[in-house]
Structures are given as C-alpha cells and as structure tokens.
Length: 83
Image 1 (cartoon, rainbow, N blue to C red):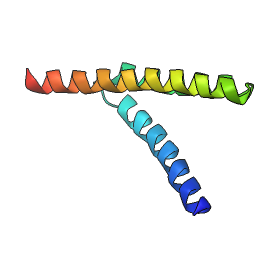
Image 2 (image 1 turned 30 degrees about the horizontal axis):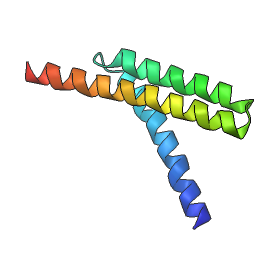
Image 3 (image 1 turned 45 degrees about the vertical axis):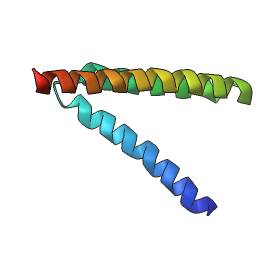
Image 4 (image 1 turned 90 degrees about the vertical axis):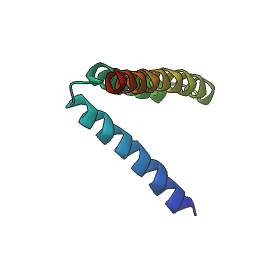
C-alpha cells in the first residue's frame, strides 16, 4: 500500500504542474496559473531548509494561497461564460 500511495501523490503533483503549465497557454487565467507556479516554487524553496513545524506552517499558507488562486480562476471562467 505504501508504494501505491506514493505513486498517487507523485502523480497528483506532476499532473497539477502540467495543468498549471497548460493553463499558462490559455489567455484566460494566465495570471492565476503563473501565481500558482510561483507560490509552489517559493513554497518548495522555503520548505527545503525548515524544520517540520515550519514546513507545516508554510504548506498551510501555500495551500491557502493556491486555493485562493483557484477560486479566482473559477470565478473568472464562470463570469466570462455567463455574461
């Protein structure tokens, strides 16, 4: 079960990066995709040199910023399609 779980997590991370890069190719949401890539890159850079307690804090903050960018992207798509 450990290898399967690691595979699913690794595949999810790789797919999220691929998705962000593909969104960069679209005119709508390019800013949000670039921000998500930047947030992930900065978060990884900060997490590399931290102790576990701070890694959890950084991951929580990073996740909230990425979630905000996703909500912004969903809102942009919804309002552009609706109006």
